[in-house]
Length: 208
Image (cartoon, rainbow, N blue to C red; front, top):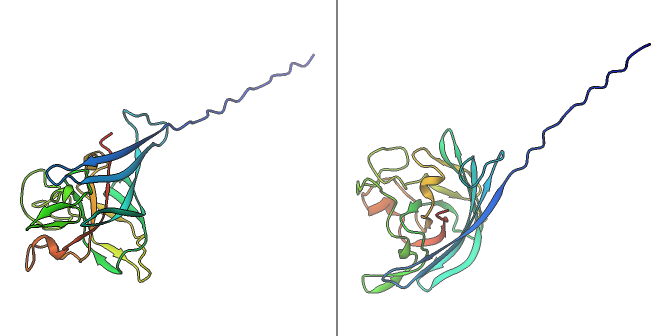
């Protein structure tokens, strides 16, 4: 008599966990309110306490009156090249734009030199070692929040990814991403902070 053997194959099912959080920053002395949404999604079965993360940050037009319409998103993830930033933006002035991580999760306006100015609630460039120097994203002696320039196409869209070698997703939590009207020469000469000038767009990252 022949015996029949049946093999049972088990296929594991991977289920990812996702959490959604929204960051809202309230200004200090300026009374500005910074609004920006960030959704944090775990990959490969990660949980809220660990695992790879992809964070999506909503970006908004800003001016001296406050926060305007949403213009798109930044998608953040960790990579071997540091923080990987994928923009999906529209409605920006064409050309290279100054692009930085700022200290506070607040996109509201603030008072400077007797006038209200856009995005001052975000504070200065993220500079945890208090270097006071703007030397660009590759130098180790300046602001850690200095990012490569954001290249905006002729139609006002930006989709070219950039990497920030010295940053990670966790390090930018509770901070803001700011886009400036001017470019960035990664120097404090002839103008401070690379010559980026006025802040024109902003989004905050949840601290969770």
